[in-house]
Image (cartoon, rainbow, N blue to C red; front, side, top):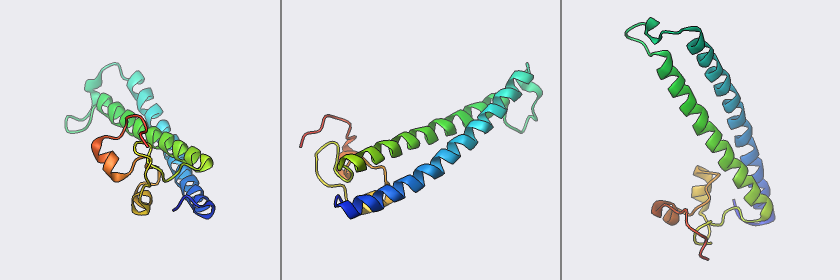
Amino acid sequence: MSNRPEGRGVARAALERRRADVAARVDSLRRELDAVQRLRSENSDDDEHDPEGATTSQLWSHSAGLVADAERELSELDAALSRVASGDYGTCRECGGPISSDRLEARPAAAFCITCARRGGAGPRRG
């Protein structure tokens, strides 16, 4: 996946497919979270569960975490699609250098090269 127009088209298609998958997962997880929330509201006492099983609070916490993770990935994919549109996809947001194709293949929404990502790459763009 390069910054050339044909590479951007391939990147866009891959990102759009991934985004559709993640959006479907977000919808499914939100439905699951809604079901857990309904269960919590129907049961005033969280001790009704099997002592060996999870409480509804634990289920809610776990489901909420999964939703948050999927929504974060969706946001990262949207940002990557914006970078494709602007021609910045594949360019590190920290140092301005190229993000390797291996990294983009493994993490299509990557905004930082591996070196900057290891340093925590969230500072202002330098290059």
